[in-house]
Every structure is written in C-alpha cells, then in structure tokens.
Length: 148
Image (cartoon, rainbow, N blue to C red; front, side, top):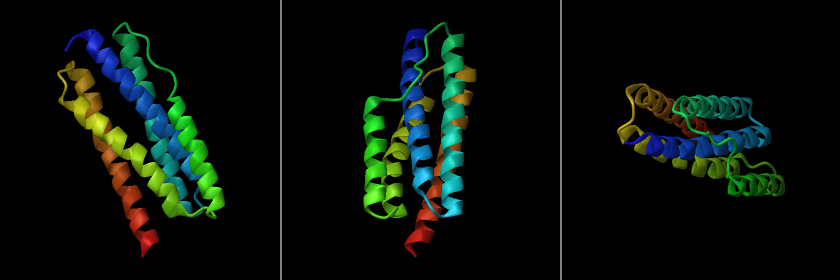
C-alpha cells in the first residue's frame, strides 16, 4: 500500500474514531446507571486517544490528519439527545444509537488490519481493533443486564 493510500485510510479511521468518541461521550451523559455511564465514558476516551494516535501516525507519514468527526455524526448525537429526553432517558434506546457507531468502527478497524501497512501501523491498528472489540463486549454485557 502506498503512503498516500495509508494516510487516506487512516484519515477515514480518524473521522470514525472522532465520531465514536463524541457519540459515546453523549451517550454517557444520557445514561443514568453508573456502570453504564462509566463504561461509555471509558470507551469514549479510548476512541479519543486512538484518534490522537492515528493523527500522530499520519503526521509521521508526512500527511495532514483529519481533526474532527463528521457533520452527520453531530446530527446523529443531537437526535440521540432528543430521543433520550423524549423517552425518559431509556438506556436501551441510547445503546441502540451507540451500536451503529460501534459496529462501523469495528468494521473499519477490522478492514484496516488486513491492509498492507508498515509494521508499526499494523501493530497499532491491531491493538485498537482488539481494544474496541473488548469495550464493545462490555457494553453488550451491560445491555444484557438492562434487558433482564
């Protein structure tokens, strides 16, 4: 993979991780169970630091990293806040909204791991993918507890 292709792929991941960070932070603000709120906040921080790591890699490759998430995600978060308020902060509804971002991030990270990137980039992407999957499992376990 060329350096330009690597930078382009990493910038797509940066936007996705910035979106995930903002969505999970918004979801944490809406959650009322402490364990769920803390898990969402921790997951949000993971995406924030992951995006920063990718920005550093892009800079190291001579590129210009993306700095923010997407406008569509801003609209998505606003809609999540409105629904949460209208539905009495129903955590299941909040988690349904979060699920979309989690799945998108995991899919892109899984795909990125398969790309032919420099070894240090590959190792970073693998770590991020494994950690994202672990956080996602924790959120799903908490969702299961809410449903029972």
